[in-house]
Image 1 (cartoon, rainbow over the protein chains, first blue to last red):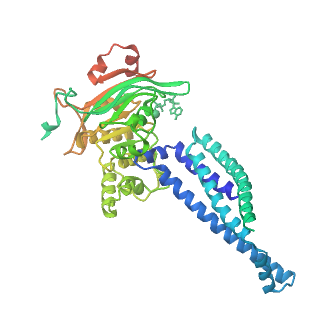
Image 2 (image 1 turned 60 degrees about the horizontal axis):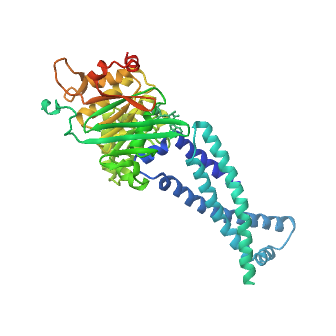
Image 3 (image 1 turned 90 degrees about the vertical axis):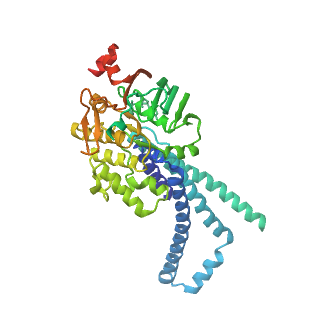
Length: 158
Length: 277
Ligand SMILES: Nc1ncnc2c1ncn2[C@@H]1O[C@H](COP(=O)(O)OP(=O)(O)O)[C@@H](O)[C@H]1O
Ligand SMILES: [Mg+2]
C-alpha cells in the first residue's frame, strides 16, 4: 500500500517536473537533481517506513490488548507477558530490516521512473503506473529473499 | 561615453569566441534533427536563431549547456569542450551561463523570490545579500511586486520575465534565450525584447536567442538601449552604432544562413526570402 502511494506520488511529481523542463532547469542552474531531489526522498522514505512500522506494530499490540482485556476479559499483565514471550528476535529483526529495504526500493523506483519520464502529460501517467507496478513486484520478490535470508541466518544461530 | 559601445570593426578575427559548434550531428532514433551544424558566437554578440518548429533550435541550446550530448561533433563553450565533459564537471560551467527555457521552467513549488534566488542559495551567498540582489533582478524585469507569488499565479509573460531574472541573477556573461516571446502578445513580446537588448547593451552579454518572430530579430538589429532614458531606441539612419546582432537560419538539420542583418536582406535564397517576407 505504501509502495503504491509513495512510489506513484514520487514518480508523478518528478515526472511532471521532467516534462515541464524543471529538471533540465535545475541542471542548467548548476545543481544535480539526484542530490537535490532523489537523496532526500530516499532518506525520508526509509526513515518514515521504519517509524511507521514501529507505530503500526504498537497500534496493533494496543488494539490486541484492548480486545483481550475488554472483550475477552483477559488479565492485562498476562496479555503483555504472553505477547512478549511470543516475540522472538527473528520477528523483531525481520520487522525492522524489511521496512528499511522496502523504503529504499519504493523511493528509488519512484524517483527513477519519475526522472526517466518522456513525452508530456501522458508520459507522467505512464511513469506513475510503471513505478507502482515495478515497486510492488520488486518488493514481493525482495521480500521473499530477505525472509529466506533472515530465517536462514537465525536458523544457523540456533 | 556613448562612443565606447560602438566597435565598428564588428566580428573580426580578433574577437574571442564564446560558443562554437563544429559539425554537430544529433538524431533521436529515426529523426535526424541536426546534420552537421557549425557556427561561432563571438564575444558580445547576440545570434538570433530562426527555423520552423522542430528544426532543432531548442536542441542546440540544450547541447550548448551539455544537457544533451551530440552523436558527433565538437561543442565548445567559454573555452571548455562541453561535448566531452562529464555531468559533474558541467555544473561549474553552467553556473557561468544563463538559460531561459521555452516554457520558462520555473520551479512550481517555489515562490518567485525563491526561484530567482535559486542560484545564489546554491552558492551559499548570505541571505540579506540574496534578498537585495533578487529585488534588483526583479526590478530589472519590472516584477518586484511579485516576490511572494507562486509561478502558477503569474501570466505567461510574467513567468518569462521571472525566468529572465533567474537567469541573470549571477550576471552571467553568456545567456541562452529559448523563444522568450513565444506565445505572447506583441506588447509583452516587445517588452521582453527590450530586456534582451538592455542585457546586450548594458551588461554586454553574449547570447543565443531563439525566436520564430521575425519582428523580434528586426527590433534587436535596429535598436539600442538608452541607459539615461531607460528605454530602447531605434538606431537612427547614419548612426553607425553596432547592435551586435547576427542571424542564423536552420533548415533540415543544416545552417542555411549565418550572417548580419544587411546580408540577410540581400540574400537570394528562395526559402529565406519566403521566410523573411
Ligand atoms: N528528448 C527528445 N527525445 C526525442 N525527440 C526529441 C527530443 N527533444 C527534441 N526532439 C525532437 O527533435 C526535434 C527538434 O526539437 P526542438 O529542438 O525542440 O525543435 P525547435 O525548438 O526548433 O522547435 C523535434 O522533432 C523533436 O520532436
Ligand atoms: Mg523549441
